[in-house]
Amino acid sequence: MGKRQTITLLLVAILHLACAAQRSDVMSSYQTELQKLFHEVFHAPTDNERYNANEQAVDLFHEALQQEKASRWNWQLGKEVSVLTSGDRKFRVITWAVVRDNGEYECFGFVAVFNDHGEENIYSLHDKSDDIMNAEESVLTPDNWYGAVYQDI
Image (cartoon, rainbow, N blue to C red):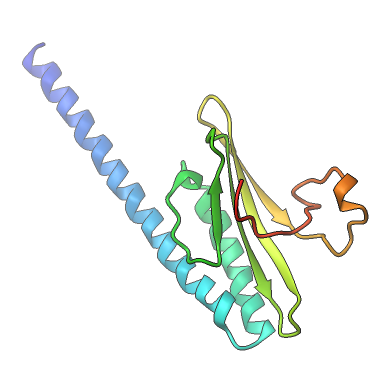
């Protein structure tokens, strides 16, 4: 291998490392902001404050998940946010619940589905559990989801 090829390979490796570090910084920033918002979602004193924080968290999480391979990021969002990856690494489910003052709750989440080419599709989950009759026999979609916080796959 000539000197020019060695220098070229070295530059490519440095650029790759710089991009990976920049991606990590971006994802860490998203995680920090989401941690703050989720703290409000779970600990704010009123329904209005919890739902306002949740709306911001959903929007920011959706934005974060649009980043390349973000759904594979090691999200650390507290014990109230469930982040589960299937054993075959084909999909990931992220779910949480907002508890209302009256004790009722509404669930939120995302599903990331990975294909064999490394591409991913992200789906927002919309809790329609109050509207679904015969849930055990229903075929549901992300827009018509029987909300739950998943603890195991």
